[in-house]
Length: 406
Image 1: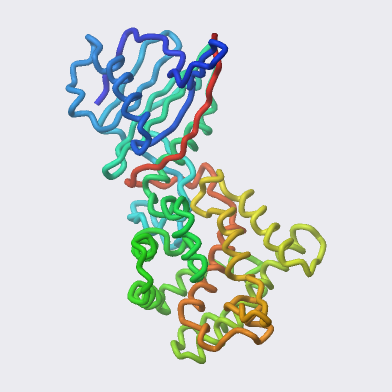
Image 2: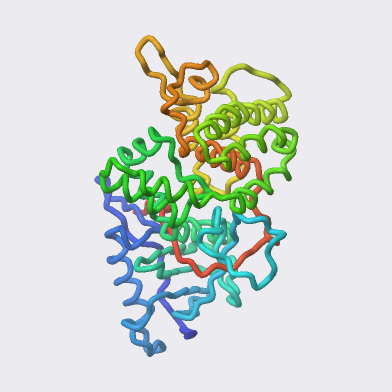
């Protein structure tokens, strides 16, 4: 639905606080979700301004989403409830297997990069106020343009995508925010791997968040879902990358061992893939720097650096900084046989000190998921021609721009 308002107030921003010297901090641009207590104060003030106009006849109680564009002449267009949202996403699936009109499920999404609105033209001189419902929560984003300032439309689309992504995959971010829960998962070799983000990760994370020590049912169920068909769909795209392709024979041996499903097969899978994780990272380091190194930390840092280059923002679902911690604390964890600290890792496995009882099926799966995560770090994000519609809803981070005024 659409309503045109002939004249609205010229809002400079929303007051945040008064400083001791008498100046004020005003949020000119900010994004937040309904988890933030400020959301409700902002919404009441904004709705009083835009939805109580004599030109606006809709009942505010019936509005669940809206986009307000305030033009430079202080007229405004209000779109509400029937907004068509488009998101630019990265998919887990091979794009060659998809045709226009194919359904894209939440479990197909590797990342959300930009959010825009179909059939609504936004000028770079427009101020914007946007609220979207995501499940049972909301996102709010506003950007009030002052003194002739023009907006970077792409930046706006990415901020909206951050909010949309946060609420769409809130379980991932909530787990990361709970340091104790996240560290327990890492200690067990788990991470919000792109391949399991969605319902599978939610089910696994909920066990840790509830403080349960027995995750065997969830882990067994997850391992069982990675059958030959799913592994083929996951790994077929690896061979498009030359670093994976040149190690295809070795990596395939690890994949085949995992599918054998015996204790010996899992041991062979782990022994093979743990070394090849390092091998891919070494090849990457040489390709990117032209140098060779024996320093594992340099390999990890270079991978994370490339991952950050190939993600749109630091809230990306690829989580490069958190993955750095995972690689250091799990895959490449140091060992010390003099103290009995020989948890399974690349180092303890290849030096022959890891305990046989630690070569578990989940560790084999985690090795495969780690390689898949690395593949996504080496893949460039979608360009403007790779838009995909999505009917999921939104995310949050406290993105804001403030100005101090007398």
